[in-house]
Image (cartoon, rainbow, N blue to C red; front, side, top):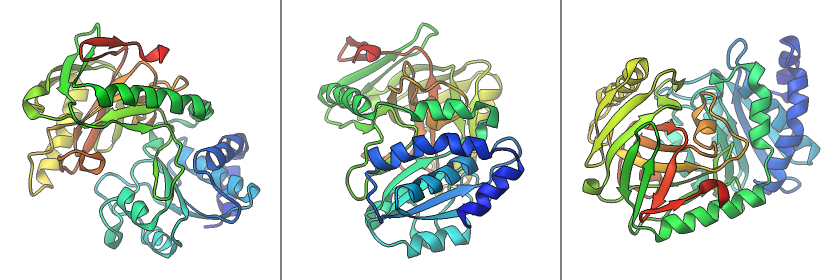
Length: 361
């Protein structure tokens, strides 16, 4: 798929100006986050979304034009939208398989990229093995085109300042033994993190094989001992489910014991989360990881806001999230078909019983 074909299609549905507005942000990310150099090969993977939900297409076309402006060597591949558990289109597999080592891969997708078939089960591991730098923006199909400027806003950051804040919080978490999250709505959850190392998502992917989610802005960690992870979490932001993200109208309550979700209550959101876990159970040879707490994360992006897209919601300054499911890919021991981030607002963070004011880092 040529960029001009995507641009032509966006023009027909009246979104060509949105692409022009995104070029500055995409150039900034290519230069200052992915450290692209003249002549670098860049593979951009997108999809067409659906009517009024075409953010993935807009960003993919804007990245392609930005790469051309920077004298890079871009290729764009568009596929149909995918859900968790589905396979990506064969042409995506071929494009990845043919991509020279130490290239750049940029993914903008409405739902999920899809299973990579014979290239392996992990997009991250594939890129690491091929020494590709990469960025991934998923679940964009949850965003109406009218909210497009909110996406650009949380991409337009001082990435050096974001790096400083992320590394300061990482140090506090690395040196801590216990983390506790509280909210005025009733969240009170604590976890052992002794000996674990936090990871940062600040979008600065300097070395071959590095990459992560964009928009950026979180520090996260895998919990340690089972018996030291317990409490109540009131999810009042957004809820991740197999099909995407659900913007909550009423809170969902998780009761957690021994690092396992014991109960889920709270209307439609609770039903959707339980259904996703049931799907994982039905499609897993081993079910033990599907209810485990795999991640604790803190949002630090000052321009992000909760809008019903996990990749953005979990980055919003003032939020925290826990994830149900797999964490083996970032230092944990849990394997699961799912990794579902549950975001809650106005979180107070305590490390070893000391309050950490995230806004003043």
